[in-house]
Image (cartoon, rainbow, N blue to C red; front, side):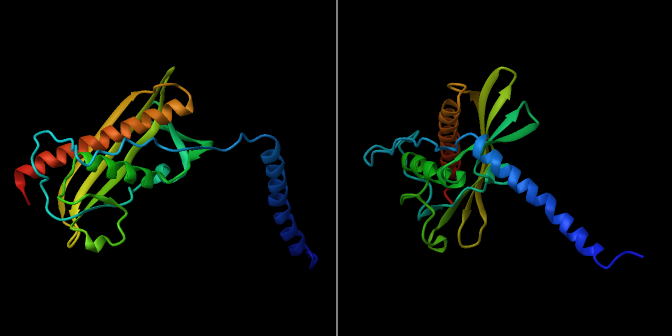
Length: 221
């Protein structure tokens, strides 16, 4: 017949292992982990208010206002740690290299600047407006790829964004599209990879804005 104290002994045993692990992890953190590195995407130059980049010089296709929502960053892209991929299926993230600002916010600011050059509405598009209900349309982007890509000795970067432009009043889709670019990194160090990701983000958003402008201009909703 077991002694009455056996249950207490087992409970103490369960607590002992996590305590040892925490202490070991603390020692490892002090002596072994690399310093934390924070990175930001570089922003495109803001457009001169007197010079707007368009393909044909026509007026914006939409009346009203356009609010830019924070980009949706599902899965690994929602974590602050910077993501890398080996070939096409092996994903990981750097333990000490991370975004200083959430990726979804950085892409929102980039989009605001791109839409100053390629306007879709008569009024300036605004990232994270105080009230989305006060907007006529909403730009909703979702990150599908945003990572370093290692293909053997070749270090690359890839960005893919899916976009929906919706009417704010009923959430109906006005335009949708997707754009993806993969390119060799400017340099193989982290700063070079972030610079390449910044350039790709600007190009992908620019491509989406230009395509939306052209197609919406033919429909004039």
